[in-house]
Length: 287
Image (cartoon, rainbow, N blue to C red; front, side):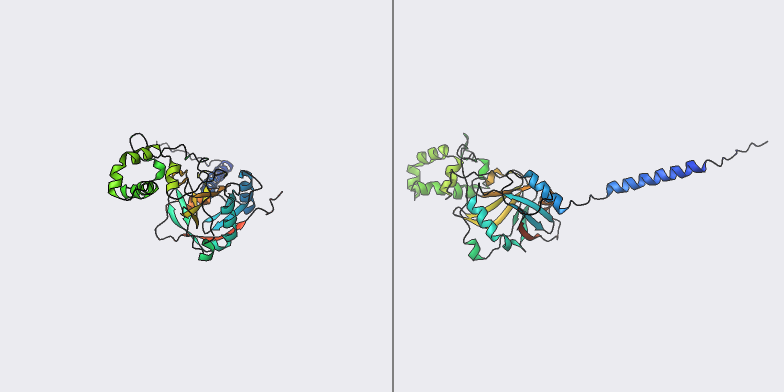
């Protein structure tokens, strides 16, 4: 005789509970995959204020097509540069962060009218505070310091040798051959600050210069005698910019937008437009 298996009707309550648990699990998984809601403008402002090195410093909000971030300016480090930048910052609306070195820095287009760029101050830098007086131009093997960031022999000749020849009043090959030992000695004894001075940079030991580090905002030099309207935001420490460009501030609060700006650009994507740069110093802090 064939034995048949008796089917159990089961427990309806237990079955419903299992379905609810399964649905809840799926919901929680989907919730975890959703992007986090962006922080409110007030939250971003509060975070920025909390990270400021001096609450009395000016605080800017830079709004871009990729989002907004805050910058604490350093008037004690570069008073003329900060004052000039604040006076022209409305003119940055519509400019772009058009130059990107992924993971290193982003730079603005800096296309201001000539009547404004002509009033830009000279770079404001204290070489001593940056350690440039203590850094030798060359090591014992004759290798030039990495911070000079020289790409090739022609650049070495243009930025190191020719300014030294000019300083020593060496004007022809015969003079160079006769004074080659003197040239070699001067190169061995030179610091990075000496090399930059030969290029025309003038340093001020009274400046409270900040080193360019991750999140620094720099007013880039057009020449050793005058700054440009280009601003750069760094994503990593950039010692090769020391002694050449003026640090005017630091990104404070959330760094996420700066990281997006400094990421590898997608093919065909337009540069990030700067909508506006405005002062956040007097905004209500929500207290």
